[in-house]
Length: 400
Image (cartoon, rainbow, N blue to C red):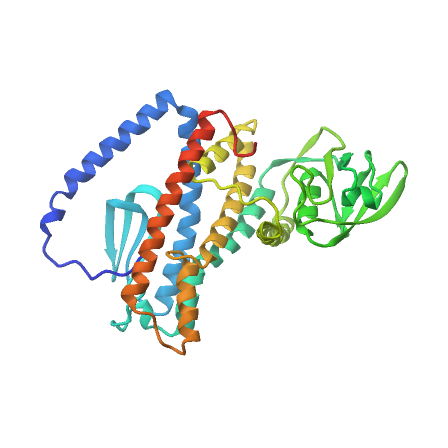
């Protein structure tokens, strides 16, 4: 969301008279870049377009939630924009202007007075509970959207491994070794959850990090129940329990679930993903290696790798939907962090106001803090992008 601005005067300002020419120059520049990329970097262009399509969809859902809750509580919405200026097209419907802009890297909702409560229909003038709902609605939408995305991924025809995970190695003195797990054991269940393939085995072990887990394995013709601790901060390359796993069979099957099956599984998978994300954050404070950061360029590279790993465009739909679900969760969590400029930062100011029994921080001071946060975010994005480009130039993937 962006802070509300005053309505533009009826006459055309002098600086706006050159807008058509500016838009024409911008359009020509974009056309040149697209044509150049098509002939000399087609793979990168495809990756970028896929990434932008996913990003715009996730941000549109985020901003739509802010827009709808603001409208619900009577906040004056100046503009609902897709992309960032310069503007391509705009149309005013009622009191709100709906725009499409040239930079397809997000979107925004421009509300009246996010910090300044001097106008009755400003966001800052609304009761605190209404402001809280408007501020967190975007992140909540991003945390709920994966239910739909995961369900769609499961409903679309996709390949699933049919081999249960087999333990290929056990690190000496690690929790798995202390519990008696051996190479060749076939994992059937983790905490009473059926493990059908390697990805599920890895996901369930990470889901229960920080606690003792029960693992049912098949050893020869016998089933054995073992208990082991899933560590928060294992040594590099060992994993929470200290095992390596591989698929029992090198086969996959093409499946597509009915909605009554995919939707409950989508809910469960979303819930698991949120807990795994929580566990990952906790592990950083427990001594595990810090987060591996990636900017738009790095995520675009990952998107392209996911698409190219599929045999056809149709088979790429399901993994791309899963990637979009994971990015949506990350976007939701990121926006809830109590950092300036982000929704969580604005919620922090709201909580400070509550703690001070209604006494607000000066609007100009809050706006300055958010501006500094925005500048720091841009600097961080530039640095991460530099390392992303350097990694790609060296032929490396974000996964290795």
